[in-house]
Length: 107
Image (cartoon, rainbow, N blue to C red; front, top):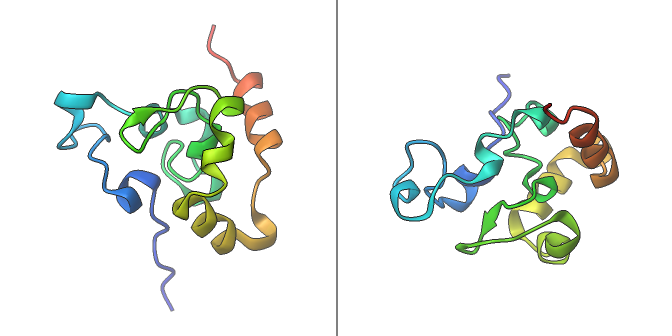
């Protein structure tokens, strides 16, 4: 049986903020679609299945700010809940994601 590809946030939310997306000209590219330090987390592309850890990701049509500022909105998000449910015991805690981002900071 072939495993179904796990979808990324921009595919689930249909926001059009991925590179080449329909809303990029109007709203810009969302950093979750290009942040490669979390590539592969939860089998996602770039940070597409760990978007809650990305500062400046854009949910609900507006920039969400830092992790601390936005996390309350993320835990009630339907996509966050879907990833958490799909990953089960393999779900990577936000503290681990943030540490990975910090350890691999460019420059």
